[in-house]
Length: 533
Image (cartoon, rainbow, N blue to C red; front, top):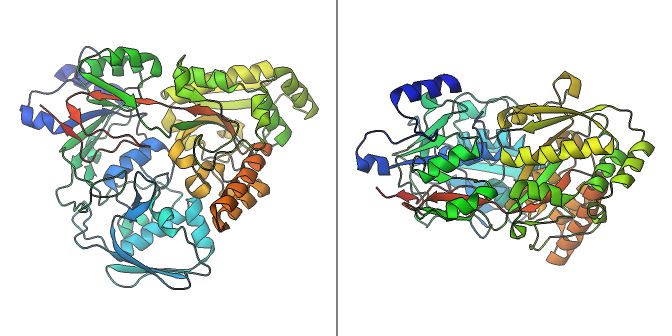
């Protein structure tokens, strides 16, 4: 069923309200209170949390799949599916034991072989996983509940790698699914998390449905981000796709939806004036805007042209396009690490403060720009990417570059950006995204900062000095050495333009006042959330 068919059928059945949102069906109030209608940041166009790194996929996956460890609100990894771990005195052998009673949604028990297969698939795509693979002797199941990871050299950040919240997370799948090539999407979505994905009701572009997994066994501890006991108080969560902010606004005001993940800042005053709606900053760690260039093909294969873009950029233009006129919602960012945190650095970042179009034009001419079209792939259904894309298209044209503006959807961007084909053959030259501030605290979970060529994130930058700084951070003996290493990393990443940061910004979330338990954090946490009738 496509989106148009779904909407037509819903109209005929009286399920769509005047605002375009989903109205509550005629069911008992008790059942309605157990169903939460949620408007996510974007369409769930694909659903393999290892194949890609889109936040919307990670957020949905956190409901369906569980992880061996999970980071808490203090950014510390805690046991989740694991009951215990042991590490040898020399740091070379990690032995993990799964806790009892874990089941997959198809009724099968979670076994050590499932964890092993899942880690093999995850480690082929994740930067920290690739680091572990590079020093791995073997990863094997010892028995049904125990597996062992043997290394050639110590890897002290093992638990953080297994529990981090940035995509791809090390979600555990059944072995039969985890054996899928990590560069091919899985077609079945069976996890052991607190909610089951109702695949038969999935209509990309319209709705995705999750139902409570009765056999889920939460930990005894209080929930904290991805750690602790994930207790589901809701029986059903419906993700209602509403790319039009005005439609989502009306639906939330009218009670047709319960929670809106990322309302436009311009609409927040309207929501704040509603007595039955709550509004708050979604995550104090905020977000880093990103202009991602493809280093493989002209014109951005030349570092001089990438630097010309940095010279011309005005981060204020990008930030006001995203957050509007509220100066409390954004900051300039002449670097890559989250402002206000221990590794924030502006070393080498002066080029991002220039905002000099004439100098950029001169740099472009000197670099030999030959008029190649710049294929800008811009998602129109995601306000953050659309706002940035409009600013960039105008900027490049004013610099004198030829712009091939490809207006598309976020799901297509997620697929297309993985292609290494030339832009004229379905590839790309640039796209926009953003990174949660929680992911930009250090290199540990910062995929977008890695600059190791073919193994790097989309754009495939190759910056040996950036990688040297990151390696030095992993090997640093103390905090001062870590800070020094990341200051060098910041300088190198700016110099080689791993990507272009467009600024730091905060975003809101909004929910009906009868919904309780909404937390702040880098993703929506649905455990412990309740809805009053």
